[in-house]
Image 1 (tube, rainbow, N blue to C red):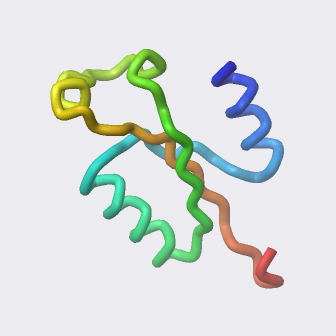
Image 2: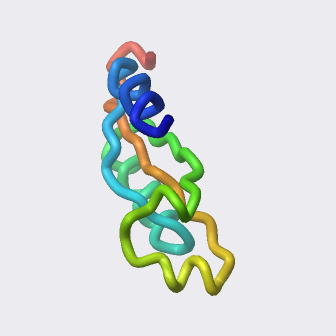
Length: 76
């Protein structure tokens, strides 16, 4: 299911740049927006994440896939 979602996002011009949550997610989002990117956050279940998730699981935090694409000059 997640591969289908990623493929659809890529076809629409989106690129997954990281997976994050909490304060780090806010910093990543703000930085990409400042650099002229459109940012889309897609909730990620802890079961989908193969990385260390102990802190998120214990803190009941939400992880997101962070997708970006360059905002075109025409605003589309």
